[in-house]
View 1 (cartoon, rainbow, N blue to C red):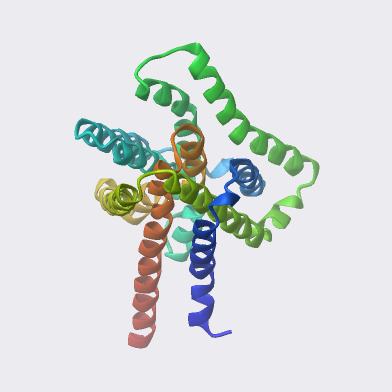
View 2: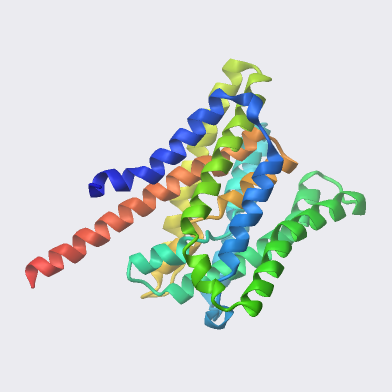
Length: 303
């Protein structure tokens, strides 16, 4: 298969899933999204080795910036009377570091352990903070609101993590097996995108068509700006020699988690923020990988 065609397969599959889902609003099903996500997390947790985790000061800056990039746009859009953009910006900015971020950093020849540490730190603290944040954003606190959200997130993250630890201890060879399941994880992600698009389409059909279309374009733009800021600010705050790593840790996000939570606790329009982010951060990564490969090839030519 030609390399160009092979490179287009994954984005093509993602686009096809979203277009198909958008044309079939009757297929919306958040239960399928939930169990696809839990299966993906289970596969991801099996090979994870926590011995490489070494927290640096910049990791704490990245963690803090995740909250800033969620809460600051939320406050600004809320003050402007655009709650739709406020929610989309919040669910886009609050997403923790993506599973694939350490892998991409490996392709770029960077320090994988740094990004892995950022992944573990953000994926531990951000989900734990979300129940309190969601109740705070609603304007009032009550245990009856807080506890169901907390329990849902504990189940969503904790069950796959616990099962993965059991499997890893019982059968160490499962680590290699999990690494061979990357194709399954991507297939589950495509299925998720189909149902996400279907749910968003169902929501849009129930709203004013003209107003909702304008909101979608605005959400896409907000998501793009947040993506560019994340990669740029991440690069700026990194120590010398770790700027790309810091950029990747803040910029590449685990949107599958926040898409599901946005569908559960907000609405499908809010979930479009992190959904668009999938395309923006993948486009950024594609550009980085292209520039890295070109630099490497030029170096070989000069040699």
